[in-house]
Amino acid sequence: MSADFIRAIHEAGIPINDEIITDGKLHRAHVDGDKAGTRNAWYVLHDGNYPAGAFGCNKRGISGKWRADQKSASFTQADRDRFEQERHARAEAQERTHSDAAIRARQMLEQATRDATEHAYIVRKGIQPHTVRVNGYGLLVIPIYSASTGKLQTVQMIDADGNKKMLTDGRVSGGCFPFADMPDFWVNAEQRIGICEGYATGATLAETLPTVAMFAAFSAGNLLAVATALRVSFPDAKITLYADNDVNQIGQRYASAAATAIDGLVAIPPIAGCDWNDMRGAA
Image 1 (cartoon, one colour):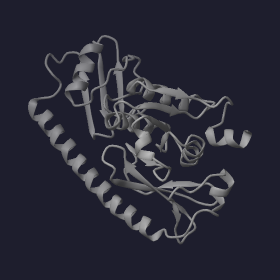
Image 2: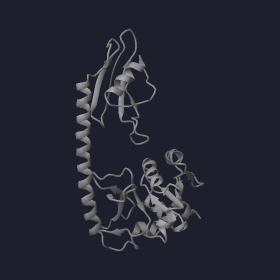
Image 3: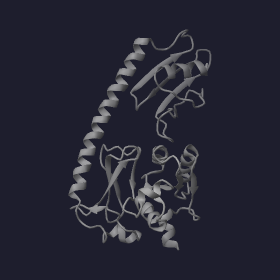
Image 4: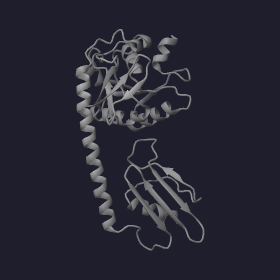
């Protein structure tokens, strides 16, 4: 029964491989190809004399129903064609939205002209700004470039108190900030690469390890995408994922998964609840 239910979900265009629970309750599942850790699919499956269920994926705008007495696929070819057309239309709309955000990001970078050396966040973290500048509202404006193409995707803004905000509708996935102002950065990248989560953590590591080409990925969930792209560009480099030592293990888990995927290494601060910038302060 579960196999038939999963087959119907797959045919609808939602490839999941989670174990199906037949308790009549709502469950979420990871969709193959989506960002690691996400659970964009949902399903409900009732057992008994007349097994039936429902499923869907909010990200893809797909939903459907299934009954055990259906002898053939839950969807016709026309249904599957329609699902694919709708998926393609959503992807095109998302790409236009991301492109518009990239244009706004470029404008914001051009308007950020003030030196950031004395910005309260930079001073408190004990780091250098690394080409990042401040806009007229007193915000650090950090560019986020595609790890695959090098093109600007979006920006992150940080205020004096350390509050962070991503540009609305900007593409963060697969994006990073390279600390390319460090000496011999791209030469070093051929040999040693470091990837971490936050900007301040990356700045700390770049200044502490000047022979390592350091990249900030901005979140634990983005480590895998950035690491995979950099492995393609630098196939012979030794790549280390510099994880946060999160109490809930999120940073360590995502860093380990990324390292495994690209044959890399993981480095974790020795103190629970700390990142590598915190360790500078603890030294």
